[in-house]
Image (cartoon, rainbow, N blue to C red; front, side):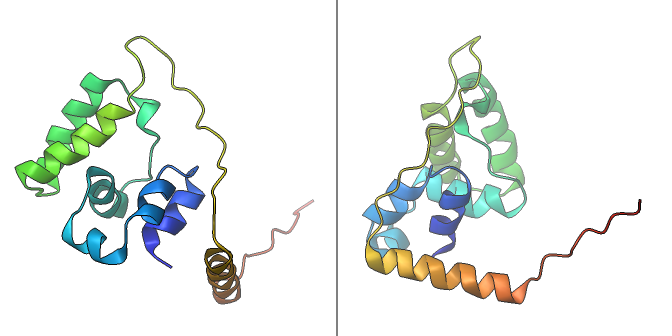
Length: 132
């Protein structure tokens, strides 16, 4: 299962549409702003909802971090365009993300279940003990 699809499920479904609609060959040939954002920014930062900041703030962040991440001008502009497209209104408050209601095929559900089962077995959750 691709990393972007799993991350989308964990962050409110923001990336589900992109991941499910592009065939794998198209994804390799044409990287959208959201894909560059996920691959570049997501390596170091927790994924934030695009409505966390206003458009002017996303532009500043995008320019600064695009240079830091050594993105090309085209990549940087694609990421900024994506972030600005979902920015919160000027002076507005960040809205809560819409509830995730993905449409998954049975094959995708099975693949997600296999992935979750594999991670659960590989990384046990430490039990918290009470010191009282």
